[in-house]
Image (cartoon, rainbow, N blue to C red; front, side, top):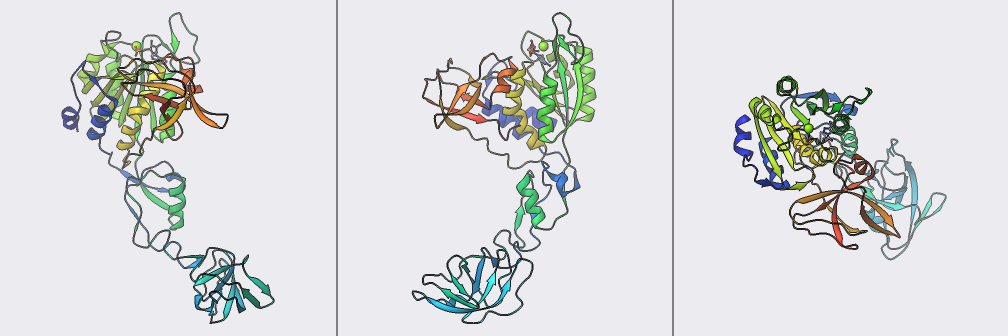
Length: 418
Ligand code: AMP
Ligand code: MG
């Protein structure tokens, strides 16, 4: 796979790469990890199906009633005339009627009960009149109505879930409806995280002058835990080549992917670049986006490397725009989920120069019956509070030269991303 990274990843630097191009490069270079395991159904939440699930039988397994009412033969209905039928029994969910519904007969039936032999139609209890064992059916009832057909949810032999499907609550229920107690899933991803920077202090320790607490590893811990990855926290390391190389080598032996923060911007911590490049095949990208412009992508041994900028907002933006889907692909998700952008009216003007694609933290909220988006203030790319206040990213295209209040902008909602 080192070869695929080298032929796929663009090396041209400092030529700037669009977000779309960078995503394409990554996704075409990365293939799913091999390895799978059987897990009990509940533990499969968030995991990726290793192979297609073929329905072993029909769901539902038998024709049954969609409503509470009366099971009859369509031919017994009177068309435009009302008709009188006689009630000969009852069918409950789990307690079928063992007899036969003949012409002129009806069986009281509950939702989910097996459709009795002879019947092909269910009349809603609200539309008929009952008098003892006598049923008066009004005109206008249709033969075949209110029936759930065997196999209409899942047909026996059909693909119920494709390989590569990420298992959510609906898939858990669907697999349970097929009676499955365990399922084959791809193995969990192991993702190592490492913060770099001379200025970093560990939480819980006192802060010396010029230091700041390392928050990125906690943000990443949250993002990766939500993804369902096994997080290997390598800690933080100073901007010091030998120590950095040691940490990265160690990480590469343990992880499928390594995420670093800091030290990828030109000039500020340049000595980090030769270290990364010397350890594996790493490409430094100059992305045409704000924030999150500098990013490294490549491989050290068997581990993919994502070198994110140190700026806490850029960490989240780059994770969501690039790393998230790259890790999904690595974990075997196929196809990758679409990432829809929604059009929402901007509550106020937004300043922007044409050039780079901008990701601004936004708050979509209901104002006088209209959903509007406003930028979460303040705008500074290092201000993590803006990320906490936001519920979306406002995505302004490269050519955008600012937005007027009342104009539509595109937003990417956080729901479902992390
Ligand atoms: P860098 O990309 O290394 O130039 O880092 C840019 C800025 O991001 C630094 O000046 C810090 O303010 C901030 N930063 C870097 N690493 C971290 C971290 N682990 N946690 C919080 N902030 C960080
Ligand atoms: Mg730094």
